[in-house]
Amino acid sequence: LFSAIEMAPRDPILGITEAFNADKNPAKVNLGVGVYYDDNGKVPLLECVRKAEAQLMEKAAPRTYLPIDGLAAYDKAVQELVFGADSAVVQEKRAVTAQALGGTGALKLGADFLKRFSPNAQVWISDPSWENHRALFESAGFVVNTYPYYDASTRGVNFAGMLQALETMPAGSIVVLHACCHNPTGADLTEDQWTDVIRVVASRGLIPFLDMAYQGFGDGIDADGKVVRRFADAGGPLFVSNSFSKSFSLYGERVGALSIAAVSAEEAARVLSQLKRVIRTNYSNPPIHGGQVVATVLSTPELRQMWEEELAVMRVRIREMRQAMVQKLKEKAPGQNFDFVVRQRGMFSYSGLTKEQVQRLREEFSIYAIDTGRICVAALNSRNIDTVVGAIAKVL
Ligand code: LMR
Image 1: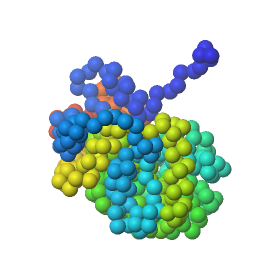
Image 2 (image 1 turned 120 degrees about the horizontal axis):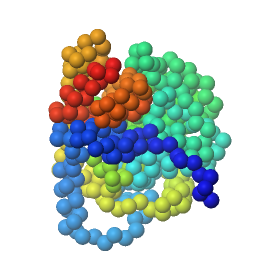
Image 3 (image 1 turned 90 degrees about the vertical axis):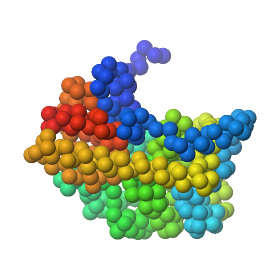
Image 4 (image 1 turned 180 degrees about the vertical axis):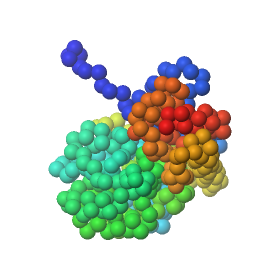
């Protein structure tokens, strides 16, 4: 059985972490994976999480199975966060939310669900997109295409190209959109551009699948979540995957959710019943701890306030690192213009570094980035930024 199995390539993102972990150089820096580190180079344990965990420890509750679709208090809190507690879709009980194993798990549930009920549809992802989008939808059995997105000449969005592609997709096509903090480019649509996208998606009968893994890392929790609410208000089927890996610094707890907006409460009930079958045949029901932590924080006013403040600290520090990087590059690489780095949103900078330059960073300086030139600005800190900028200036 195994003799003919070929070695699989390393994962383009998590494979970088594997290589980083194996590197013995004490000055190594991992700018690959999308993980936020504080200025001491540590993944933070948020204070709101610590407090919620202390409360949960105090209760010492038994670890029974959760319902198939997860902790009810979590699903409710997440749905209200994603759509807004006062939104029509929540008020009219047209939305279903199921706890999922991180954002990736939510995407996979959505993909498997769609494959069951829309088997002949094709999937469209942005060019470029998060590396795992294509693999994930292909492994669910879909043909995955790309729509134009990034314009390297402007370091922004090729919006005319994107809109034209949307206008010519067959009805029923599944369009994966990044709700905020586009991964990997950091180039987001403007509100007006979203208006056009929402209009075309509705008029062509496309199925929008919004991936929101970085809520709160762009302009704030509400600002970043606005596009989801706008899609929901427009009516029609809508899929939203969201993740608390980054915004709660709960990477290893695998805590996210899939929300689906339907047109009526009765339709939503049928959707949920089928979604539960997808979950049951994948992993039965989700783990309890991360969901309890997030539900506790979101539903306790004092902890929620604390979370919003802690998330703002992360957001602001990333912005400061962007500014520092641009400033330092001006000094170290005077011929180059990196001003675009401060315009990009979220954890990443699509730096424009070539694959060869990224390889040199890795081999000569133990600085790890994604081959596409994506670097995680959230991994820069006041101690490693000079080394990183110095190395970038040398490979340019
Ligand atoms: C990333 O893009 O680096 C993150 O979303 C982590 C991952 O799972 O790829």
